[in-house]
Image (cartoon, rainbow, N blue to C red; front, side, top):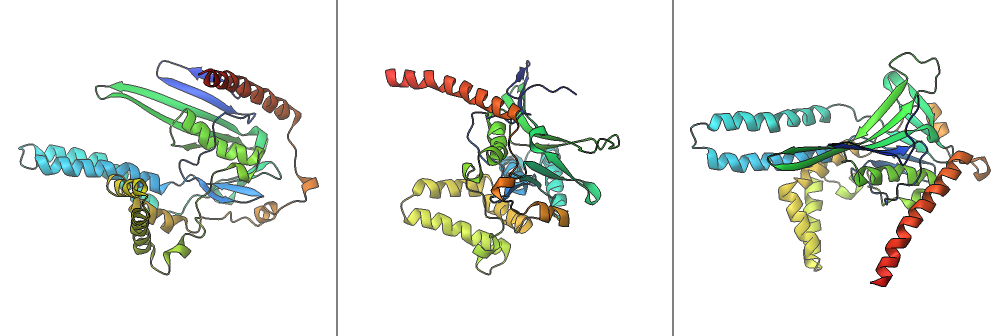
Length: 325
């Protein structure tokens, strides 16, 4: 099956699709973990999870607050029950899905092994795939809608894997995972976390969340009370040290996004994050001597060199214009 080359962009009237891999060439965007997907990071492997309970809370919370305020001012209206039903559906359905997800096991992460240049993809019933890194597909998909409220844009980062078993049954030949991070540059920045780790190293990534040590910072308190106290301590510390802009941001996030609740649930479910329960993968995840590390293919070496030259050519005119000004 032929795939568009990495770096290709397909634009339509209300959508855009940017193909990022294969081959995994630079996107030109700095890596940014916009969804807290990095669960573990070391010199051997990177665990990427798609369980973003905090993002779900931060989407539902402002909707709930908005409908509560609107309901307070429309309570005396004759048709208040219609508003209540509509608000219940808009907020209640995603809230039910969120609560249902809280009582299900956390999905296992993808594991990117940079020394072997392979990816472990957990599947159902204890199965897993070991997929060559350079065969992974990635695309940033963005859709736009126009309504009376204006233009709205939504997007995903899709990462796809092919079953390495040539005799795999129909329906078990491909697997893809979507990250609801928005399309365009945001999706590219998230993809760069994985690409930069594999091609540059762990030092190229932003500082990861310490999910494994999250409970230790609660100082013996339970998750919910401890995270609430830590959040308020953060506001107080920023205010006392004169960093009012950070203190005000935390207050804003408290009321608008329900940030403490998001942190509570995230710590409860992801501290520590799940590990891959396969003895073979534990062995596969051990470090190798440098002389045994897998190398880039000649095709990827040439593609990366060409792409880096393109990015350098694009940045040079911009620097020249800046110096002229």
